[in-house]
Length: 170
Image (cartoon, rainbow, N blue to C red):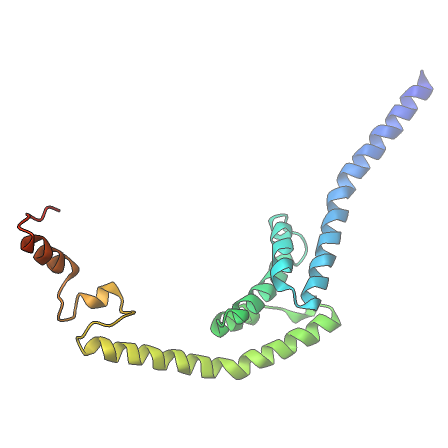
């Protein structure tokens, strides 16, 4: 009887230890996989893995996700967002290899961000100039169309309905 109780106690202790260690070991494996994916440049997949780890508040997963988001934003052409994400990153949490990669990435962003912002500002000024012209154009925001020679959206709709001899009801 005592022998059976000792065996049962040992089994219970082993099961408890496994239950406690499994998530930690599993998260460590996922974290290492995400780091390797980042080193290979697969930031999207690494970001997905790190998202799950971030929910568990595991190690530096949130900070690694910012690096992934920076690379993803850069890939979309959103250089200003990439700069924003990288400005919050502490490179000391990275391996030496990854730190070198990210330092080069930061230098690349810094060299491009000024040109990118200047280009965006120029596009915005050109858009504003076209809006002030008063003539509607393709790509114009609806709020800006209201200020053109066409008038407000509802007045155009009223004119159409009146031309059909129908009363406009709102």
